[in-house]
Amino acid sequence: MSAAEKTILDTLQSVFGYESFRGDQQAIIEHVVGGGDALVLMPTGGGKSLCYQIPALIRAGTGVVVSPLIALMQDQVDALTELGVRAAFLNSTQDWHTAREVEQAFLTGQLDLLYVAPERLLTERCLDLLERGTIALFAIDEAHCVSQWGHDFRPEYLELSILSERWPQVPRIALTATATTVTRREIAHRLNLDGARHFVSSFDRPNIRYRIIEKAEVKRQLLHFIQTEYPGDCGIVYALSRARVEETADFLCQHGIAALPYHAGLSATVRADNQARFLREDGRVIVATIAFGMGINKPDVRFVAHIDLPKSVEGYYQETGRAGRDGLPATAWLAYGLQDVVQLRRMIDGSAGDDLFRRRLGAQLDAMLGLCETVSCRRQRLLAYFDQTIEPCGNCDTCLEPPQAWDGTVAAQKILSTVYRLWRERGQRFGAGHLIDIVRGKTTERIKQYDHQTLSVFGVGADLSDQAWRGVLRQLLAQSLLAIDHEGYGTLALTSASREVLKGEKTLMLRRESEKQARTGRSTAA
Ligand code: ADP
Ligand code: ZN
Image 1 (cartoon, protein in one colour):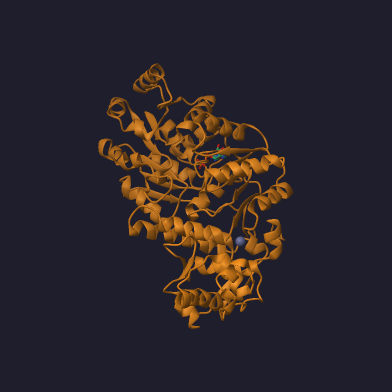
Image 2 (cartoon, rainbow, N blue to C red):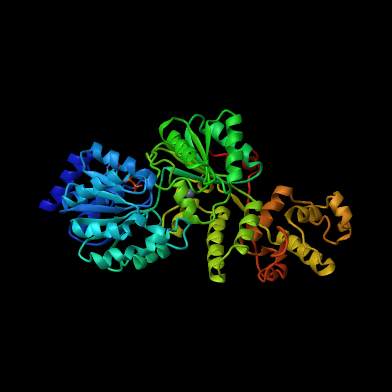
């Protein structure tokens, strides 16, 4: 063992009390101690912090950590102080006097680590301060915040390239748990880290069991899932809107589950309070929008449930990654249905921004839908998105209970030709529910009102259940063989790709849902 390796291992053991390094930690630390730039991609819970904390302790001067997570700085500093590391932070929650003390400590070389929010760092005063002290390294945490395509985008991150201009000799280490090749390239490019060495860990979290079920009555499905599988355990439930967060938290509370809401519409005090209770108390379930979770380090979250479809695989991976950080079995549970696809497609069509932006959002959603509809291993599909290859995992719903695929070509033709006829013959467009009523041959009030029982397609699909038809429509939407009509409210229209199916030039293999799963929110293998 070289002297440098020995110092690094000594620091791990004597300061942090750990026996040995995990994964790439040692290689990363050696590289940064030696003055190299690094881009570190490691899943949540992988142990990114040590990768800059140990080099900061070994190199002369202070390690400056740029982090957007102001709310967590106090906790981080407290934890380090406990270990005897000289750490402090500078952010807007501090009074002037405290900030002055921290600045003095930095200038006189009494700090090993200094945490700073990006907007603070970029002030002239702060840059000036840094000029006057000794810097061991810059760590840029949550580096994916530089990506304009992600939902954590922070404009100030774009200006962090200034660090390389003003301190070209100081090593920089950027860290993130977000890992597509595209994001990685974007981080390297925008942070001026073109020469940095990349350390890419495996993104597999083998202890998380991925399950995606078809949405029916989602609150009941969720309740059943928690009550039967994780009663009294800690979990996070993600929903798309504030209203749904509130309504779901209420519902769970009414049924004896200690749920707390969290979203940007709550006051800062309530949010901080709910977050603190979730972190400190046992068995809390937090129901939240995606505003919740970045930087949350709670090891015993047993499940992460999504009651609405996430907008991208990256977001989904980040959010589910908050489950089971202690390495014990945990579940990522997602319920999604036809309405999710309709809603998200409409949201994208209606979103501000140029065509390219919308196309990108569309592609992200397509990847997410692909993951939902896959008939092969979920984990394989998930990791493939991050350019990582694995064997089927044996710990996801499709591995444990392989779904059947069925030839849905004829069913698809029936529903697509219904859409076609309504439009061509009568200039009408309808949403999913009414289309299903037509093909199933139900004489509802609405059917009579529009005289739809006289259509030649009326009743041609009586052989399949409502649920099966919703599955067909969902998968057609997922594959862009049907589209949401721009003018209508969730009414459906053909796409340029529909023609191939209608003409019988394309075979469509569809995923068959287990009826039991939809009823109970639980896969039979679980
Ligand atoms: P990340 O920032 O990648 O999400 P952290 O740095 O917060 O992860 O580390 C996650 C947990 O793993 C922490 O509790 C940390 O103390 C622990 N940890 C990190 N490295 C090691 C190691 N080499 N041995 C044991 N525990 C470790
Ligand atoms: Zn699998």
